[in-house]
Amino acid sequence: MAPIKKQVTKGGKKKKQVLKFTLDCTHPVEDGIMDAANFEQFLQERIKVNGKSGNLGGGVVSIERSKSKITVTSEVPFSKRYLKYLTKKYLKKNNLRDWQFQLCKDSMVLLTHSL
Image (cartoon, rainbow, N blue to C red; front, top):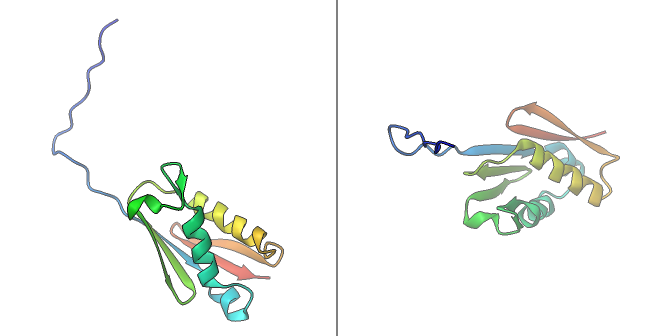
């Protein structure tokens, strides 16, 4: 069997792609149903980077909160579906799943609404 040749790309390294997701929890926070700081803490504890939860990859993934909007920024591949999964898990853990739902406005924004 012939050895497989590796293809060499011209131009060197690829540009880092920064992914930015916004979780808008304005309505539930204003209604007093949900606490944004608690949700931010939950995400910091649960997001896995390289199979380990809680470490956020040493600054590779960052979570920031401004009032009731939480922004997750990642320099490594990170799926919106995973963020949606964690949001559902948080709502279920705090018995809010029956009262709230998620809505994807566009590819980078998740909205949480009360029923």
